[in-house]
Length: 222
Image: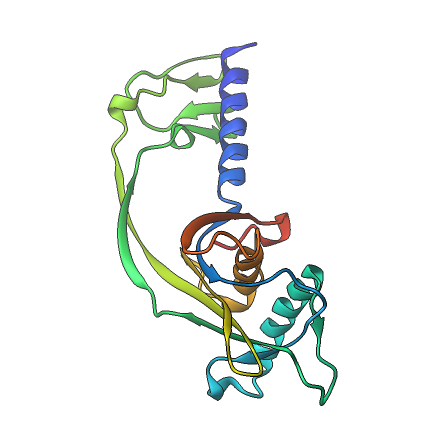
């Protein structure tokens, strides 16, 4: 394999690796419960915050929770029926916090395609050489300057409580927290709900890091 072919292969591999790593959401899930195994109990999902009663947004997220509960063996209460369990749900996202971070130089910055030069050349560096229209060099980490950049990090939260309708006995309390650059809650909520129900009801009294793999259609979410 020629030198330029090796370079192109390395660049392509790094792009593919970056795409895979970035296609996830990390969540911290804490759960406390004394929840018996489901035996077809009926349930209804209501907002923990009364101000969200009648909200179309809440209704959309409540459907996500209901679908998960149905898969576990619970049954949604019929209209005007009496539910055995009441599921209280809430969600929020903060205004974001500015953060600073650093990243090292990348091999991608060293190689460029120049149609007038008929090939690839190294844009900057200290060890470049070329032949037959191609100029390329070694990726020397000692000449990479770390780059400082800023970004806004948002804290996305979802909470859920399950209690008996009669007597109000609490059977489950859980919360999901995720920090990322995306503040579009409608796009994020399906994955926060998924994290809440991963391994449900989970180990009581433990905060667990749950990584959600995103589909290709949601690769833009961070």
